[in-house]
Length: 228
Image (tube, rainbow, N blue to C red; front, side, top):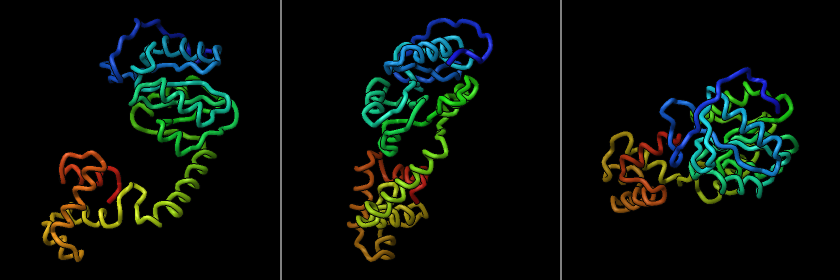
């Protein structure tokens, strides 16, 4: 992976505490070790020199942690998660076959996978910036596999337990929808055939499970997450 992104100026070293967003608006990027020294050196050199990225030598201080792997499995992805900061998103450059469980990879923070074949520094830079903005980028084949896994999980795991894909029960979703529409708890109970105490307990369960502050926060969380 030679530097093909054009001449750039060398920048000053970056010191960042925690996964803090840079003042310049550039993603704070760290390169994680994977046992592929040539790829690590190429990634590290490019990020250091890129005018669009901000380099950090501390993976736990990165907003976006990047790594080059040949055929990543679940164990390798978990190890990368441990090397990176808790809130860092992972961008992987993959040269071989994808072997990791996609559900677990997403849970571990993988937001983008770039095949080594056809790799360009321009696409890499764009992907890192998009990931930092909250987007994701997976090859079509992995997108299809992820959708298949999601459908299986919904059909075989969630539905039999009365859960929605977002982790709410159908009853919780109904209660939150009515709260969002401005209904009082007693009115919600009357509509759904439950006591007001039961409605309070339903809301408390959602608040506690998702570590929310109050009912308004629960409604906001559900709407923002597309759960209701």
